[in-house]
Length: 231
Image (cartoon, rainbow, N blue to C red; front, side, top):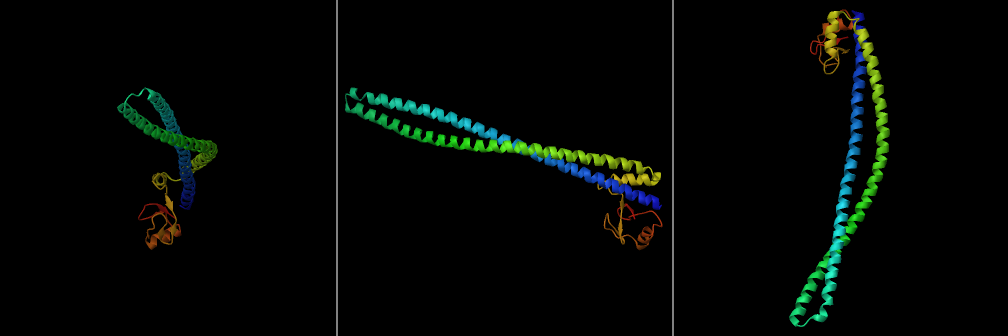
């Protein structure tokens, strides 16, 4: 009986190491995902900024062309002044010039605004590109480190699973069956230590006589609440 209790305690120890390393592995994998997502998001931001800059520059060039066309129209109208023969024609020309000059002023403001936006976008892109380069270096280094940790965890998992499987055969068939079922439960706990009369697994107070027998190892017992083996 004492041998089986000691065996179960040792088995639980190996399994605790397995579960710990499995948990650490998942944590490392999530860290890798965080780094990869950060890199993807940064690249996506840069692509959007590049597309925005492209559109700004296209609008800038188009506005410059429009401005040149308006200037050409103004020059053409002013050259016709000498051919004006009536006050009515002069008034019509002045109205046309007024509209064109207002359009010119608006286009000049647009051109300056777009130029300012273009310069700001280029500056932001420069900073983002620098950040991307640094992030790629940092991401590669961290992911390499995390993969090494995952590999180390897997080695620990394999080592302790092997020890577990080898030792499990030392339990009698009936106890081995119950122990295996408990160890494969959600929390991975098959045997729990008694703290006085309290089961450390479920914090349930077991009967005093059962606690006494368990402490003296007079019999192999289980918690009356959670069903785990107790010692």
